Image (cartoon, rainbow, N blue to C red; front, side, top):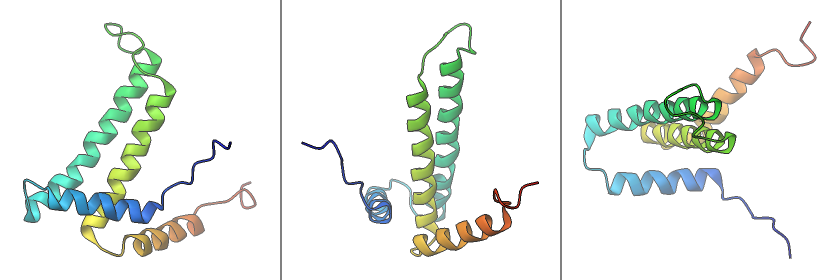
Length: 114
């Protein structure tokens, strides 16, 4: 028996999360959109909290997190960012792909590094 799990289609998952959040959104319109964007800051803060927790930088609390916690929080940031992007455009996949292509093309790769 294999432990391999087929990963979900990222874009279908983002659309499903967006649809669920839109249907259950307590604040709509422009304010709802802005709050969706602010959620990203909250998630980034949770990454910071986990990194502080894994390194024990808060002497009052000590070590409170693992690197796996940091990984999970980083995944939450990515998911939240993609849902926020989906909030701005239904062409999430295309917008993200075009931007990733531009960033990749302007970034020095291993062959270009000196």
